[in-house]
Length: 121
Image (cartoon, one colour):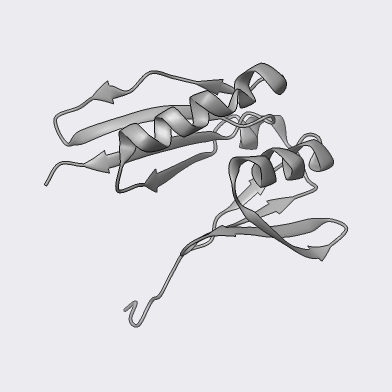
């Protein structure tokens, strides 16, 4: 039985480790270098690991859901940062309404897919 859990930290692969590190720092995450092969990134209570490791089939199937408190503000900030214009393969969708809440999608430079959303109250 699982008990006393405090957080989960997914591992993301990077086709170009240095490019991905720069992307996540520009997105607003703080980087903690672990080694020349891995860094941890965090913002508030959210953490994930970025690896200098890439398997296309794995990364193309990686999805992370990031729940935010103000979806419109988060979407506007990412769009206004113009990261999608400055990084190849980065895409940011429009906000989509679902029966459970709202979300938009963002692909990082390697193809990892972020679902950024807010659940309905």
